[in-house]
Length: 165
Image 1 (cartoon, rainbow, N blue to C red):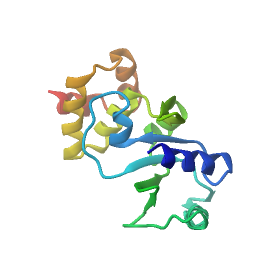
Image 2 (cartoon, one colour; image 1 turned 45 degrees about the horizontal axis):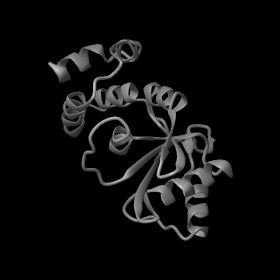
Image 3 (cartoon, rainbow, N blue to C red; image 1 turned 90 degrees about the horizontal axis):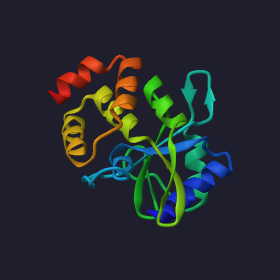
Image 4 (cartoon, rainbow, N blue to C red; image 1 turned 90 degrees about the vertical axis):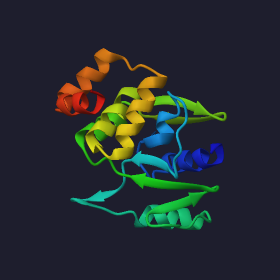
């Protein structure tokens, strides 16, 4: 994955994508025991015209580098399926803006904070997210004050309580 992150860092440095951070199950792996996942979720700011986000320039740049879309919106970069996702909610925007610098295999990257990852899973509320929340909490405790603040500001406290009851 270090080679994949190197390419993503180049995309950011060249302005093909804006600020990025890793989210999803791979983001969780920076804090808790690994869980099975198919892809690398890269949340990033992308060029936008009005409400429309154009992935064309990103895919064109990746194609010049020899990387082609595989299934749906995934692009295989150095053997890792990568999905580039614009921040779709205020919570995800906050998570992207407040992501932490981390290192993987000697390569600098950015990762959503643990508490944001938990809150995003509560927000999406998919069955696999509920399971991942339980597994994550068994592995590592979040900063409860920070998590409660995030959940409260994004109106997720009731949903979190139902998921973790």
